[in-house]
Each structure stands twice: as C-alpha cells, then as structure tokens.
Amino acid sequence: MPAASLAAPSKQVFDVRPFDGQVGAEIVGLDLSYPLDDADFRRVHQAHLDYHVVVFRDQRITPEQQIAFSRRFGVLQIHVLKQFLLPGHPEILIVSNIVENGAPVGLGDAGKYWHSDLSYKALPSLGSMLHAQELPSEGGDTLFADMHRAWDTLPKHLQAAIEGRQAVHSYTARYSEGKDAANWRPTLTPEQLAQVVTVAHPVVRIHPENGRKALFVSEGFTTHIVGLPEDESRDLLAQLYAHSVQPDNLYRHVWQPHDMVFWDNRSLIHLATGCPNHLRRKLYRTTIQGDAPY
Image (tube, rainbow, N blue to C red; front, side, top):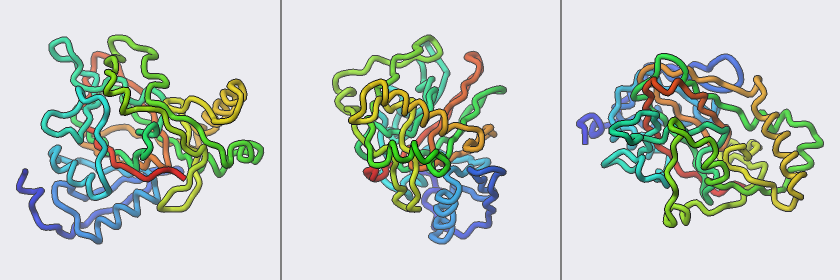
C-alpha cells in the first residue's frame, strides 16, 4: 500500500464551486492521495448531497487510494463482468474502448443508455466514482440528469399515474443491443446471470439522506411498470424518460486529465456520449452500495 494512503488524516484547504445550472460542483485544491480528516470528509459528503455530482480535479491517485476514499462512503460493489475488473483490485471496473492483443481491456460500451448504476440490484448503488486514466482528444463527455428536478417538474397527472407504483429493473434489458466491434459485451455465464436476476423498485424513490423524491427509472435497465398493460407501461415510461432528460435537468461533464467524478445514483441518471473508436479512453470505476429504495 502506498505510503500516502497510510498517512494520518490532515486538514486541507479546498473550494467547492457550483457549476452554472441545476447540477454539479467542482472541488478544487483537494488531494485525495491523503486521507481526509472528519471535517473535510463531512464537507465533501455534504457537497455530494447538495450538488449530486462533484468533480475532483487533477487527482494523481493510485487504485488503492481510489478504493480507500470510496470505502469512506460505504461497502463497495463488485461488477458482474469480472473479466473487466482491474487485476489485483476487483473493486475497480475498467471502463475502456481499448483493445490489446485482440481483446478489450475494459467495458467499452458502459453507459450508452441513460441509467443509474446497478439499479438492477436489490441494493442499488449509492454512488459511483470514475477516475480518468486516458482520455480521447475529442468526445467522451458524460451527461447527468437530475431526477429530483425531473420529479418536481413532472406534470401532476403523470405524478398521480406513477405514485406508489413499482418498476422492474434488469441488467440484461438492453445487454445485447448494438453489439459490434466498438460495443462488445461477453455472453453471460449461468453464474453471472444468477447475480443479475430482475428486481422491482419504486418508480418514485425517497432519497435516504436528503429526503427528496426522485424518479427511479431509466431506459437502460427498466423493463416495465408492474401492474400495467404492456402498451400503457411502455407509453408511460417513454414520457418519463423524455421528461427526465430535458436540457434544464442536465449537466454535461467535459473530462479533464486526472478528473475523478463522484455522482449520486439515487439522485441522477447518466449517459456516456461516446468517442471515435480509434481514440483511446480508459477510466477506473468504483461503485458504493446503497440502501433498498423506498
């Protein structure tokens, strides 16, 4: 373990700077290679709750340090695609379009549909941290949509239609769609399929820390609303999806070298916008387990 990760927590001077718009803030001046003292950690935690996505600039941290910081927020979840986990560090999923010796080094099409990470689990993700390792010279942005604001601005008749209902989430909902050289996904083994059985969650969830309501459906993982005819469920979900990603709800993250982005999967959905196939992109993701939605 690096010496820095063994250092005693220290007080650091840093700024939390909200972005223009409804979502997001950058945290400038904080070095995550050193453990945060309790006061600094509380400040970061509060910024995460207030802005839903926080960007730590210029983080020259090791995988061990990313894991250690992530664990401050809770138990880490191990992704089902074990072939894309960082060797020696199964807590880290490699997100990458790079192919070496004829094989992809990471999950190349992660996030091509709007989604909340691991919403298909009984205990979905609290949040995810994504640390830039290699960035393309063009493209590769990530979009985030505020699902609290999506609920708050939803027309009353749609609020009434979904309040109290549940929707089914499935990892395999769109797993095989669009498979090609740039969007390659391995066939899941029976053991892997057993880890991603379908689950039902409330269409409208209450955030366990800030108490606010948020829509909790996404085109990536939600298959249908329980108890509705198929056509009615499909139409209602399409309206929710379209409303969720209106421009006023969005933050577009344009990656800078060594950014680490930490978002709240209970408050947001996100989308990878993609980049040209020939440009290398690699990031390391840790995912923190949350509570059962209610």
